[in-house]
Image (cartoon, rainbow, N blue to C red):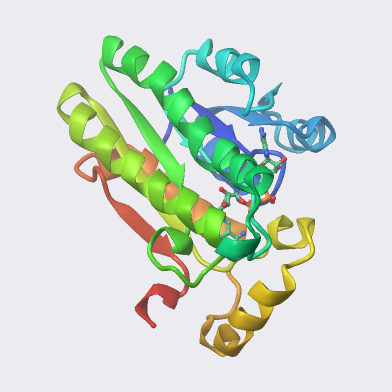
Amino acid sequence: MTLQGKTAVITGAASGIGRSMVRRFAAEGATVIGVDIDEAGLAKVAAQMGCAVLVADLTTAEGVAAVAALDIDILCNNAGILDALTPLEDTDDALWDRVLDINLTAPFKLCRAVVPKMVAKGGGVVLNTCSAASLSGGRAGCSYTASKHALLGLTRSIAWYYGARGVRCNAIAPGAIQTKMQMRQPPHEGGMQAYMPYFPTIPPQGKAAEVADVAAFLVSDGARYVNGEVISVDGGWNAY
Ligand SMILES: NC(=O)c1ccc[n+]([C@@H]2O[C@H](COP(=O)([O-])OP(=O)(O)OC[C@H]3O[C@@H](n4cnc5c(N)ncnc54)[C@H](O)[C@@H]3O)[C@@H](O)[C@H]2O)c1
């Protein structure tokens, strides 16, 4: 497997799974551009891994335009936020909009801008970071689950429409991975209570590098006949 000669843009690159993707893709020879809203975190990634970086808020038109202006072979829509396990009745408009804006609308707008350019230059690859919550109702709160189900739908739609024109679009569905994501907000009390009986069914937490390994394969030519697929990287959680 090699990504030699490819330019890969990875969103959410300042932390967690995105940062591990930067490391892994660079090790495979890709030219990596890490994108994130977190300027300080990105600076550390650039210093440690020698990649190019772009500070951008992907919920803004300017942020999307800045990324879309790049010449991209591989686009990884990985930036995302959790909803603190908030159930439907306590999901206010602000939470819904924030989660959908970053988890779904940003990948949609980036793909809308980038995929036609990939077609024009003869091909490209998109990889969307979905979630175990793309496949089941009991992995997160209402807005996160809805956003990640919809992101899988976006993935399949792009795969179906653009596969014959040289653009593959797949998804990875991480399970419980050790990153900062869960700690960024305190969990919703009721959501947490509903969730707790099922904790023993969660496999031991995985590492961001284990997700990045699968991502590196999916964006490589080794996966050239894989399109519109979602690969769980969850230690078997989806099998329970
Ligand atoms: N960690 C898990 O258990 C897990 C499980 C399933 C799916 N995921 C998904 O994996 C992806 C990466 O999550 P992670 O666990 O590495 O989380 P993380 O919080 O460590 O990293 C997410 C990154 O996204 C960036 N980001 C957030 N909003 C942004 C915006 N508006 N513009 C640009 N960047 C923005 C953050 O600054 C952060 O660096 C997410 O899409 C998440 O939903 C994570």
